[in-house]
Every structure is written in C-alpha cells, then in structure tokens.
Amino acid sequence: MNKLNVAIIGCGGIALGKHLPSLHKIEQVAIVGFYDIERVKAQEAAAKYGAPEAKVYESYTELLADASIEVVHICTPNDSHAEISIAALEAGKHVMCEKPMAKTAADARRMVETAKRTGKKLTIGYNNRFRADSQYLKRVMEDGDLGEIYYAKAHAVRRRGVPTWGVFLDEEKQGGGPLIDIGTHALDLTLWMMNNYEPKVVLGTAYHKLSSKENAANSWGPWDPEKFKVEDSAFAMIVMKNGATVMVEASWALNTLDTKEAKCTLCGTEGGADMQDGLRINGENHSRLYMNQLQFEAKGADFYDGKKESMQDKEIRVWIDAVIHDKEPVVTPEQSCVVSEILEAIYESNRTGKAIYFD
Image 1 (cartoon, rainbow, N blue to C red):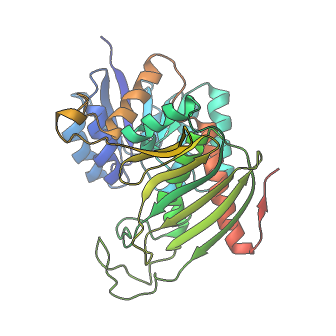
Image 2 (tube, rainbow, N blue to C red):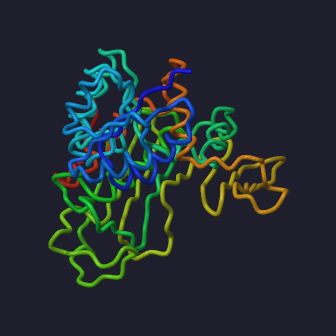
C-alpha cells in the first residue's frame, strides 16, 4: 500500500509532543520531510520519527518544492502560520496548521481563500474537540438535548501557568498572550458546541497586572518581567447575531482557585452542561431538577470502554483519514477564521475601550 507522505515545518515542542508521535503511529503515513530554523532540531526529529527516505531541508520553500510531499504540518510561531500555510496550499499540499489559525484575522481570511481556490484541505490544531468529554457533549448538542444555547462560557484560566520558554511572551511573534494561546482553544470548543459562528459585537479587556512581578511563583519557574510583552489575562463578552451571549476568560496568571482550561459551560432552554469535575449535564424532569455526572477516565471495569486513544492521536488520525478519503476536516478553516476574528476584536476592544461590531 502506498503511504501518504507527510512533512513537518517547525520541529519544536508542539511537533515533538503532539504531531510527530501521533503521525508515527499511523500505518498509512510516512514522515518524509523535516525543516526547522535550528537545523539540529530537524535532524533529531528525523532520526527519531522519519521514514528511511526522510530528508532534512535547508528551507521551508525547498521542502514545499518537493512534489512527493502530500501533506504538511506547520508547527511554527503564530506570525508565520499564514505565510507558510498559504505557500504550502499553493504548492499543492494539504495543510494542518497549529492553533491559532493566524496572528491576524486578515491573515486567517487569506488562508481560507487560498484553501478554497486551490482545492486543498486546511485544518487547524484544535485538539480539545477530540477529548472524550467533548465528543460526548457534541453528540448531546446534536441530539438537541440542551435546546437552544443562549448563554455560554469559554474557560481558559490558570492560576500560575506562564510559559517561560520559546516566544510565548513575545507579542510580535505571537500576537498576544493567554487569550490567543489557550483562550483560543476554549473559544473554539464553545462555538463548535453551539454551532454558532455569527458574532455581532464584542467587548473585551486585557490586563498586565501580574506580569511585572519579580521572582513570581509559576509552574515553569519565574518569568522575566522585561520580556513579558503580552497580557497576563483577558476577558470578553460576545453577543452573537441570534442574541446568544458568550463570556470568555483567559489567563496565565490570575489570583483565583477557580481554574479551568479548554473547557466550556453551556446554558440552554432544555438543559445545561459544564466540564467541571468531568462532564455534568443538568436539567429538569417531571418537575424536578437533576444533574448527571459522567466519568471519562477508566476507574475500574464499570467505566472502561475499551478505548485509550488520546485526543492528540485521534485528532491526527481523523485528519489523515479526511485526506485519504477526501472528507471535510472536523475543524474547518471557516470555523477557525471566526475564532481568529473574535480574538482580534477582543484585543481591539481593549485597545480602543469600545465595543467592536461585526458587519
């Protein structure tokens, strides 16, 4: 059987921690191309995950010029997502780009247009859609069990979890801090559950309240206040065109014990759900309120469903299956573009002090 030739651009943490291990498990895939601005990273990745014929390229343009490569995974800083994705699509490759889709909404729209024009598949790495609780809740939503969702929350809150490596604190490279880094996951998950991608108005705030602290307690060691150029927390209210309200909370550093990351709360006309201590579904039945709590971790035979596939493995497997069998990706570029447009509107609202209206 001919294998699908896949290449990686950017061989840092997200490639090594997610893309390469998951791709390596798929029999139909051969990882044949590697590029990183630090050549040694590409060489090490190729040695561990590459097919026998794998090659380390001198530039991403050289890699994209290789006609044998069919799929490209892009794992670079946010400011290069659009440039490389568009070049890859133009070169006839199917593309998985890490989240967020792009640094700016304009770049995200260019990516959507290029995918449509070239006819190549484009997806974005919103892996939290593939968690077991997310998949179950999506089925609940599609069955209409919660009714119309008119109020929701997108949660991405860490008490002290500032990433102090790479370019996370560099606004020029990333476009922002926790909002565009982890808030993007929570917002994507929430809009996907609601199947609502029509924002009307956004009002947002962003803060630099804790980033100036010296020797701060932090999961990955103290940050350098001089290098902390992005917000440490951001919050927003989004009103959708159908009247639904979505609240967004995103932080790397916030004095709170109420921490939830890449989770959502949904309130509908027939019931509600939240991802607190597992998945909780609530509602009313026979004039009584009820709450069902579902477990998704194997804790004995009663809870084991025979499957232990990680969300990352499932995300990559489903994406490769979409390429092989010519199906639409689970995460579409149009959906991801709306997420980027909303994130940009939150930052713009914070800068201007005004609500940002969509056409």
